[in-house]
Length: 336
Ligand code: SAM
Image (tube, rainbow, N blue to C red):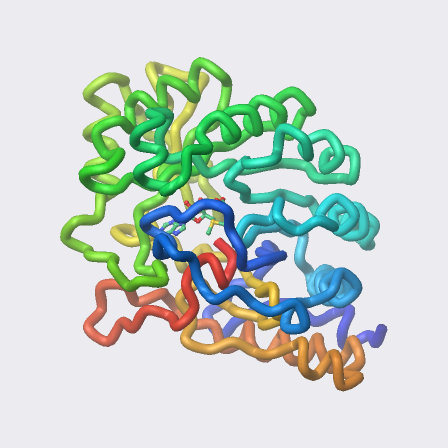
């Protein structure tokens, strides 16, 4: 690999440098969360459109050479990719070895947590929006709460810690039970983080006026717990504002991605399951790596495409501005 490639960094014109790569390993999912996709699912990518394991590992390797230090596997539902343990092992074999995390709905993690940890997975975030079985089935349109609970327990048992739980509150579905979810996580030692619902659903049903805001979440949690903000200086590029619960040491995080965006501290870049690099969840454009790679592009040429796309990263996502347009691809196809 050339000197130019090894010294290049994933910088943008606003002074940020990407170090965290989100890799979507599939766009398919076995849940149908209302804030994400319609009941009937979506037209999934055909196999030839998706990166093979060799292609994916090659591209992740180039990102690592360009300065990526953490790789987060996501989707769609990453556990649906059969080769996942092998992919993790191959990413763990890259030099310098990136930290490897995964965002998952937890279904199947009871079986896969052990093999994934052995392969080199370091940490896991499990998405769980409610522990009420009726609310869970309503929100995800699937009756799989027990599978998620089993997956979480397995992740903790094999040391994929700290086990984090990601939750989205939807008005009229689970917004009244957010304190129950926190109590449940505290009892089990899971670190809970709420994320404001973003306009990334395939059916374009997001509505700012009905979104449950970070302020409202905080109020609802405060009805049951004493919530004290941790100093902002402890936050770094982490998107969650963290709060001590009942004096600590347990904490809860709230990610105000819409009402208080953290774009200025963003250190993320993204690779989709079909080999497009995206500099932001909300970007209107992406750069194709799969085509050039299949046409024989060298690592240096692919690195140039990646650094060019990162340089164009916008200052902010622009939700709330008059000219905001939701990206064409939904969250599940980009990689959440
Ligand atoms: N299937 C995996 C999972 O459930 O974690 C990974 C992909 S999923 C798209 C990643 C995360 O995005 C989940 O925590 C999910 O709750 C969140 N998510 C999906 N759509 C969202 C939206 N419109 N706003 C905020 N978060 C969303």
